[in-house]
Length: 122
Image (cartoon, rainbow, N blue to C red; front, top):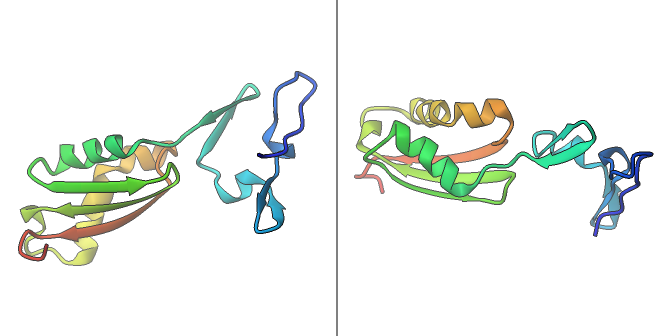
């Protein structure tokens, strides 16, 4: 369980929170700046669900087979679509990143590993 100090208002503050990691303590915002948002002293989780990531990709690739595995911070997706025919890996990744751009720019999605394949490659 994290150790957190209370501010004068009685709310827990991130600046005094430490979480044990391999016998060491670290300050969370140094490692996961997009996972939390602090508004008026209230800490909000800023992660996105696997289903929401799938929906964003599905909107851009309606006929694709999509799987997403994530833990609220790092995500991995496999997208199988005929729309990738003739595209190199960079162009495929750019297309998937464009589909999830709103979640990346909002900070809800921090890290995404992409496996983009054509049906013949799957």
